[in-house]
Every structure is written in structure tokens, then in C-alpha cells.
Length: 120
Image (tube, rainbow, N blue to C red; front, top):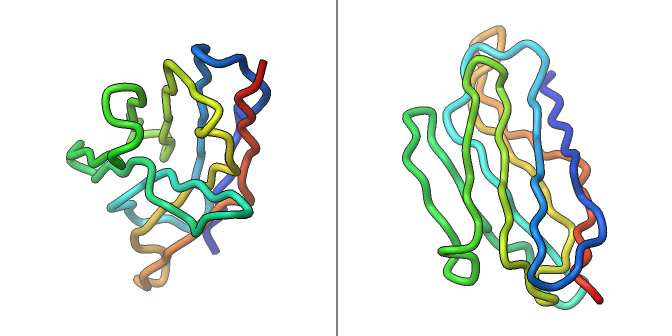
């Protein structure tokens, strides 16, 4: 099994910054894609940012220029640096990891989510 655990959520004022971390662990052979998604009670889960093992990045339109995704392949960890936060960024943020695990099967694992609240 592969476990994915997020950390770093919390309460921040509008215009502030926050960094989320996510670590994958378990019987991992390789991780191809890692990413961050978010969901509110009113919206379906949406893609925030993804990054491949080679470092190619993709961002949702609403966070471009404000959020930065990065990855440490040696630690199976992905980060999301969030700047210029807005109240509409308030959501539960989920981490996702896709890759291969022993015994050479594909995995697609989600974390439990971490709450980010942007409010004054």
C-alpha cells in the first residue's frame, strides 16, 4: 500500500502565504505524477497544480502566478507554496500521487486532506 499524508494547512489572512507539504510512503517503486487538488462544499474537486517526475508543472487558471508547486523526488514529497491568498482559496486541499508499487502494480493514492482557510 501507498500512504499519502498532507500537512501545513491552517488559517491565514488575505494576501498572506502558506506552504503545504505532502509525503508519500510505502512500497513505492516510482512516482510519476504528484499534485494538489482542492474542494469546497459548493464545488467539485478541482486541480490546483501537478508536477511530473521530470519537473513539468501544470497549474489551474485561478492560481497561476500565485502558487508554486515543487517536488523532492528523493523524499517522495511535493510542496505547494501559496502566495497572495484570497478568500476564494479557502478549501480542503488534497494531495495525489500516481506511480508504481511492489509488486509492479500501479497506484493512485489520495491523502486525507488539509484545511486552508483564508479569512480576516
